[in-house]
Amino acid sequence: MIYQHLRWYTNPSEQRWIVRILFIVPIYGCYSWISLLFFNADSYYVYFFTVRDCYEAFVIYSFLSLCYEYLGGEGNIMSELRGRPVRASCVNGTCCLAGATYTIGFLRFCKQATLQFCLIKPVCAFIIIFLQAFGHYHDGDWSPNGGYIYITVVYNFSVSLALYGLFLFLGATREMLKPFDPVLKFFTVKSVIFLSFWQGVALAILEKAEVISPIVDSDGVPTTAGTVSAGYQNFLICLEMLAAAVALRYAFPAAVYAHAHRDPHRSVTMQSISSSLKETMNPKDIMTDAFHNFHPQYQQYTQYSSDVTSHLPYEKL
Image (tube, rainbow, N blue to C red; front, side):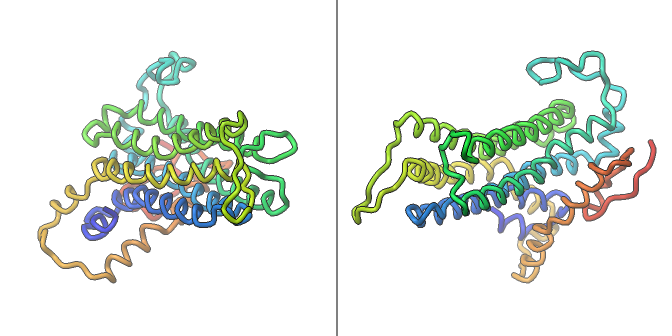
């Protein structure tokens, strides 16, 4: 699927985000499989966990950015939303916004909510590696003397805020995004990221309840319950990525971009595919966007979809 998008790379402003989202399947699958290979090797799987999970923050941001591209950039979105009343509803998470109208601050919050996860997740990953090296981090250890409980709380708050910002944006622009079938796309991305996290928490609770017990392998080497729980998590993720790959194939089809090309039978060199992949995975745009959205002198800016690699200076609307 990734190859097909790179082969028919006819709309880079959209497909760069799609390819980033699709990469979650091989990254999750490969790192989970490698973790299983090192299942009983002094908790090395924790290091693979942290690298793998960092990518999910990248995916949430990429999905929001893709929606921005579908709608023509922030300037076009704001021109459509400005002045409209916010739909106050507990279901939409906007019950406290009755009487408010959409402003540039709303779009900024949605972007900040996703970007903070891109910043917090790598920091949490570094802290986990540091604590693991000194023996202060163990999966399923809810003791206040360990780091697991604190990392779980911070991570849960951060990912929930990111998904809440994404949910608010989709709720505000659902009519505009209707031609792009955002529900299937959002549900697929949310399921891969959020459900895998809660699956890990559920396994940790089962471990704490002693439903999952320590084991001893054939060589007489003991394995902690936390390691066993992590092994179940990795095994389940390997299976779930198959279903995720199928769902993402339908959510982000490459056919629409292939049909947009004048010559559907054109040959594509590996050099062009490699160049497209390199351009797609460059994280420079995230750093630029974070600088704009968290800058203390932020006022308003317009992001044009015709230039996805840079942002124009701030301008008052």
